[in-house]
Image (cartoon, rainbow, N blue to C red; front, side, top):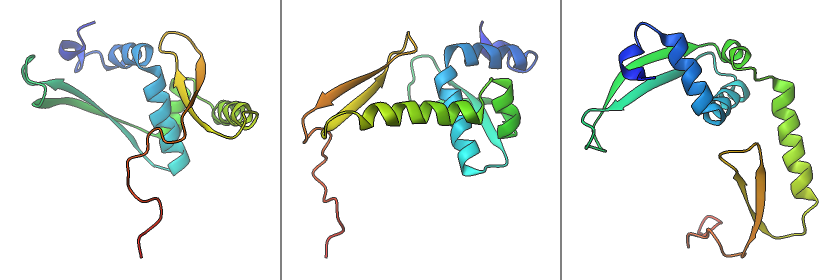
Length: 131
């Protein structure tokens, strides 16, 4: 679906397509809005101004939702959110002490765990405030 041309007349179809293609992102944003107690979740549809320009964009449309209503539309329940969190927490608590990377498989409902060296992702900045 070329959503750029359908955004005004077929919003529901565009949202459904985006939900199919980006379900994890939409669920994550909705979860954050619910946990933050936000009154409104605003989705923006953005496109490049010119196909070859990666820095110039134009806002095509925005859509506002109440987070609880949108969660219901995308079949996201608070019980399921906490269930997923508990499953991840339980799985990671069983691992020996160390540093791990959790990666969601893009094509499967699988979360992979990789052990990484202790200095991985260190940016060189002090962890504690300097005195």
